[in-house]
Length: 450
Image (cartoon, rainbow, N blue to C red; front, side, top):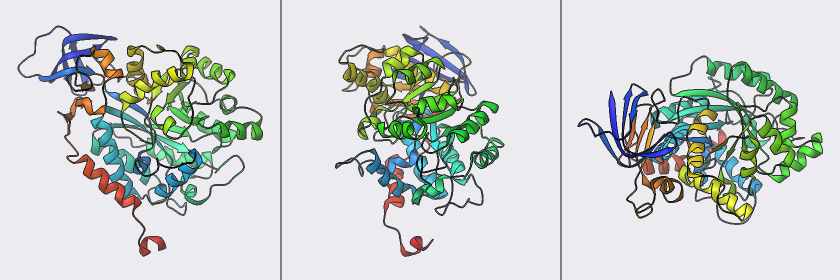
């Protein structure tokens, strides 16, 4: 048994004082407020929350931070820089980079990540000896960093509505949804305890409608979460209307790809009818505010989505920053910018998006709360930093604190971060620098020939 004693803890939607948390194995066995601190309990000064769920991540995009933010351009010019990094990755370098990125997430309070994975094959498009070598590298990296992972294995079949895969995209494709399904089946046969396998459609521009329907049917048959990039760019909507006469959301609906297990990522440029479709089918929406503003995507109608019935979650996507507290704060602040009105989401609603709703979107509805029987994840945020001192605990978490204020993280009963130190990856900055250098330095002559 492990015990922790929280100065303050968010339990049942309220901040309570002096909370004793006990875990047997990977589950909470007791959560009791107003309790004295046993001598064998780890003291947690500050506010203790359930572990954070980072619902949308592309780990290798972290290599672009501080390298692709400056200058003019659009999402599409940024994408070319991203493809250059994708072209450099192999299973060993991907594992090293993802380990460092997931460790950075753990330091920010993340206990589970949804890794949207489409980098499947060799540079020439041929499979590795293990066709899932890249996916397994990500699963292993999560274990190395002490983070649970939902590997959202993405079907990616074409470069646009009327374009074949080209250049670095070639390694993304399996050819058909049936070939994608057969490859993913091998992953489903051997899933370690810290991992969950999910399905993904990269986007409506990357997968034809009949193939979307096949991926969605496979996800339903195996009760897998299904994630899809949706209407991140207005150009995608225009092209989809030209190719199919409907919006991307309507195309997904026609392919029977919407529903409670589906998460639409970004969902930025939606019509009223699109919002009604997502809300009416209880399709989730994962917004990634720091990415959407970095890439100049625009401001989505998150308040309207929530009101329509679409559960909201949060992701750090391309990792311009890894700070899920900032993502939660920006969910409210971006809606203020869009509407020029304050007060759209309560602190409790923002924390729920970051925790319980996020874990459910990753296929782990048993995580995300400090309750007996739930997965024993916790995150403690300092209330005595220059950012949080003097603030109300719940308000501090979403309107004042940053990832730098995370002091302790426990994942499924296992301590991962103690007093701001990662216990499994001792030098996270060094690991990041080394892994990023390996995939951004100029290629040697031998590497060019391979």
